[in-house]
Length: 404
Image (cartoon, rainbow, N blue to C red; front, side, top):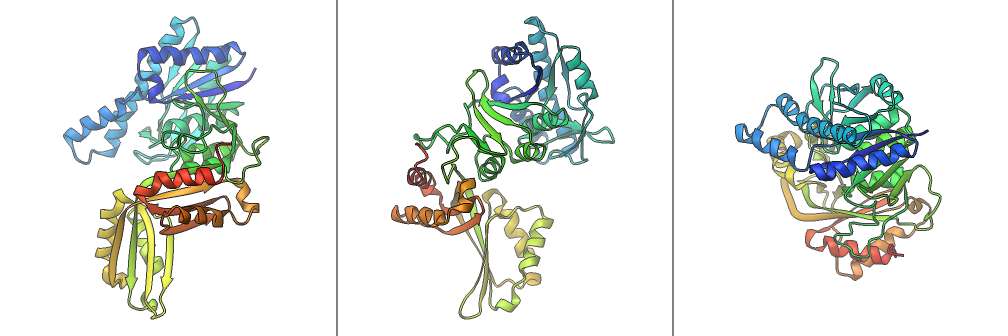
């Protein structure tokens, strides 16, 4: 007998009919002889509706009360799913995050899981029950309800799988697996049978929306085999593990892209006036995330610093820099919007020189301007005009023959 954790997102439990199909998936695993834990999100767009109601009351609702409000969405789902399982003849128990023993740090709206006391879940499993747990939520040491932020239900599922040493954690979603790139934009995109944790982590961080990076980090740290598969079908999905046993001949395994990127450039008259560390200290103090960074010095001794941010953070970024202009000795600030980031990812890149050159050549031949570049051992990212984003993804998909 193994232990399987299944996670279902909001679209997979959006109606009572879909909750019935979700129950069938849990029953199938039970009939295979497994102990089963099901982690679920709030139904459909119910979280969005709760947020909208709160924003009718306040433009900036209190974060503690928002956590109190949003945590109710998952409670509805777990109760309905447990009822459905019982109606289908299988004993089940639903638990909120705190009933399931999930303790978090004391940060409202984006807490991290600190510990899981799994005794209650294990007792229910030993009694032959299917355990249904609310994702996205937990309780602090001071008994304050918290939520885990974007991708919180994925994180809950993997954390529970880690705590109970599950044999597998399946993230059941509205796609049949992880593709070489987003199939909505690139028709030749192909489902991958396997990815390494590092490859999936890079793809998730670079804009692939299938999994949240935090959940992949948990799986990697505790070596939990992770499967991404369709919610209501038995078709095998994409396995995410430490090592590949197949499909490991491709140097580039996937392409990720995201728009709404803005480049901010700071100019100094003299390189001696550059206050690079202080710039990023100021931004960090204001919780502004920075991505690609390029520093330059001209032949005339002028200094400049460019970095990318999410476009949604532009006004806050400019406000912080303008406020500190004298302290940072900034001469001029510039920003360029309507940019996108396109990245290639593959663990084989570390031992195959020339991949970046191949990428740049393909983009240049197709008249796609490269504005910034960032690299790591297993990825190369380029900033391009947003209007060229999808074309760049298609060009690179063809260039590295990812459809084969």
